[in-house]
Image (cartoon, rainbow, N blue to C red; front, side, top):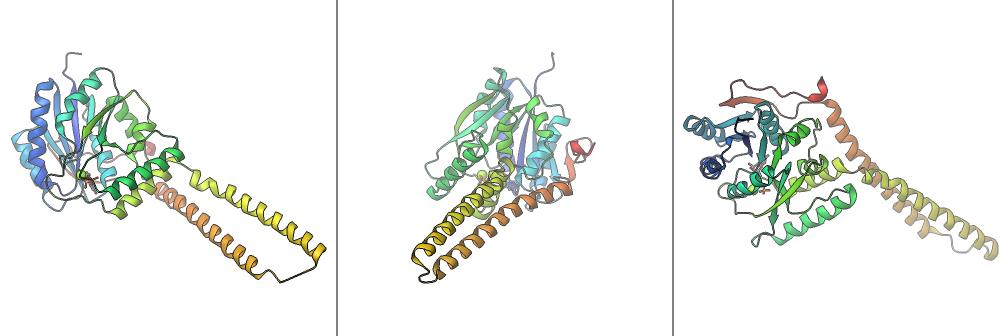
Amino acid sequence: MNRPQQLCVVIPAHNECANVAAMVDRLGAVLDPLGLDWSILFVDDGSRDGTSEAVRFQNARDGRVRGLTLSRNFGKEAAMAAGLRQAADADADAVVLMDADLQHPPEVLPAFVAAWRAGAEVVQGHRRPAPGESPRRRAASEAFYAVFRRLSQMPLEAGAVDFVLLDRKAVEALNRMGERTRFTKGLFHWIGFRTEVVPFDVAARTAGQSTFTPRKLLAFAADGIIAFSSLPLRIWSGVGALISGGAILYAIYFALRTLIRGADVPGFPSLIVSITFLSGIQLLSLGVIGEYLSRIYEETKARPLYLIREAIGIARTPVETRQDAA
Ligand code: UDP
Ligand code: MG
């Protein structure tokens, strides 16, 4: 009970070499007065700019700065998973997840820790709308979250970002999720627990550039919806029934009409329209099934989420383990 609380700040970093030192300085300044036993864990997600070397340099200056280097770029979700696993192995009482580019200001952390000490088990950073943000990206993200909320019944909002403090219990819960297609933001909600929201203003990226292209973001959005809702899969039986029902009514109408008035102009247009319309629907529904199927295929291969090449400042290079393998 007398042991100071341990806080581990997990930072996924992909080509963030220029930000490592600033992150460490600003985090240190903020964390020192909190009376915690803190550490920082950079997860180098296959950077090609010497991010790991920067972490090793920081580790030599301060042993509380540590790192994991993944064997290649596995994506931010996998990097976060690697960091959460390592933090739990290192016995952290709480874990903070944040970006490496200082867009998530370390100065907000005292508020996170205060909420945690007051009993919150998940403290979710909530970004206020930024003035300089591209309106197109903002509108797209609002639209995505509106659809996501309807389909998944999860109260996830556009401002919710991967800037959170997680109590040990929440970290353990996340570590038990073996899924490959990860939408961590959704998982924060899925696990439940007492959640507190702390608003913050996003800062501009200090160095380097965002590696999320519109295409990557679109794929991420699809992953998010598919991971949390099976409605896109189920909706087609309803649509199919509706269309077939309509087609039957139409056929009855035509039969009656022919009986009463005799055959008039043969109905080529309606024929063509219905054939193309239905084949369109069929292809679409096949596509939706394919989307789910490909994710099921990914999951059944049960490959590890990430692989670690080396650990910096950690006694033994950890091995990725899957809970469900046991
Ligand atoms: N990131 C990562 N792996 C990737 C892409 C990004 O670990 O494949 C990290 C990146 O280093 C940063 C965070 O994820 O710490 C957010 O990335 P970025 O700033 O590019 O995204 P944005 O702020 O545009 O959402
Ligand atoms: Mg960023």
